Image 1 (spheres, one colour):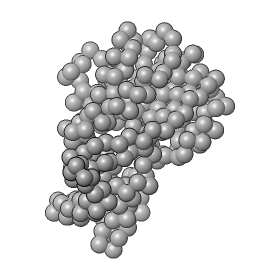
Image 2: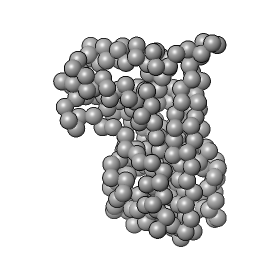
Image 3: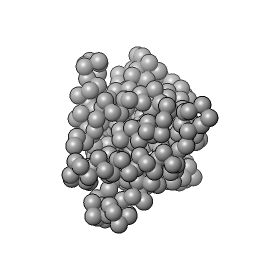
Length: 259
């Protein structure tokens, strides 16, 4: 199956983009001329940055060619790069007024090494601006881990086969960046997405967190069975509200480190 499916990801475009909008609105950097969007996906976050800083030159980078291919047609004049964020942070010399990443860095390990390297790419008076999910212990993600470890499914998930998210608590990021930055802003927001059914929670994770699990299962009938079993567990974990809707909570960490 494909590494990323832009159409699946954008089924929840408004919900996925709102944290990006909230983050960009908080940035206070004067004279923004150069911005990079790390983990730009299909371009929804890049569009937010273009609206926030219409006079800036915006570069967008993502490791998935499928996402870049989906982003280019709407804005072919922008600079789109297929590349790895960690490699870019280690090798790039250009600095940007805003180094921005919304819901991407959780896919990369070793944040203790990565974040200082990203901050080094920030120009004087600029900012490193990041948002990542912090929902690893919520039912939707916990159920995936429990299924992978179960007797029924563990043959597909030997050690190291599943690429889970990487995140720490907010204090970790403060302690990491405070010695480097002139000022650090840090907050958490829990979003409550009102979805028409629990099945939509499954559709949400098909576009992101469930992908590594489905990729590890090599047989299509087994993938379908995995999704069906997960869907049954999700219906129990996210019961319908009296109005027939499902409340899907999602916690995110935000940080802005100013140079």
